[in-house]
Length: 402
Image (cartoon, rainbow, N blue to C red):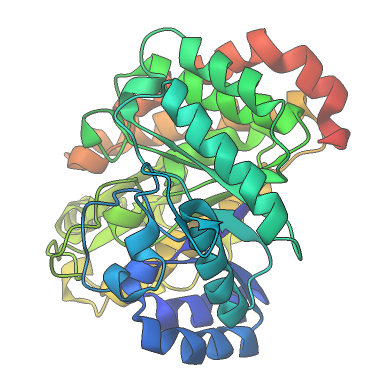
């Protein structure tokens, strides 16, 4: 599993900086956050810094006109529910032809084929997506095609009927991989009470990998480190919460996130803290307990641990975002293992370590509020156990083949 950067507001320089640090990076471009007339120039800059690019057309909500999205030539073709032809070309074909033009401008490594976020996964959903899969094979011929699977939260709640139906249908889709975006239950950043949502998403990812397909889980955060045992190829994450969980950020509104709190990600606890809570740790003499492990190769948060009160340091949004993504990248590297069973053990160790660290610092009143991982540990452990029970044997056997 790798970390891709889910491009969002203000992430141009961050992407370049991290690519230089990591020696390479893969970025999923966001037309919502890049004006059309800047695309060519920005992509040339990215290429000069060893950044591989994907282009997410972001066709999720066709009736909403975001000021940047509406600049792109395919946007008025997105609502392809009413089949029509122009010069004997269907709307689906027109859509894919225009998307190919932007992929050519960006010199992407693969195509992302778009999909709409519907309120339910029904027969109409399968028909529309299968049609796009088939048309993409005719038009997007020069590199691999990754089909978007856009899931409302309801699709992953309750039993696994929808998951099984998706896996049964996709067995017959001629496509190279899948780009999964899933709406979180109750629009929560961390999923802390819907075990079926987590187990069904994990099962879907594993099932698609067992079909020998590439799988990218978009709009992800550190909770999805636990997906490494499904053998998916990448999770994609970014700076602000709207690129760490899928949300309808495609309305015509200001692009810049309004929340300006500065957070510190404590990797060994899988939790984030406002800097004022680090002052508590400082005053109680336990701040160094919260320093990133040396194997995470991170210097962005060093200023917090140089002996000064954290709120008096120069730690800013810039360092916060780079620290989070750099830590996530190196945690993924550490969690990649040679077998399914080794991967499960590594995940259990990660979660148990997080639980011990959380129990210790909570005694001093150090809390992560809605970014505290305490209530997520059991959710992730349970989901891993379900994965082990349902697919562990075949994943262990096929580990080196998928």
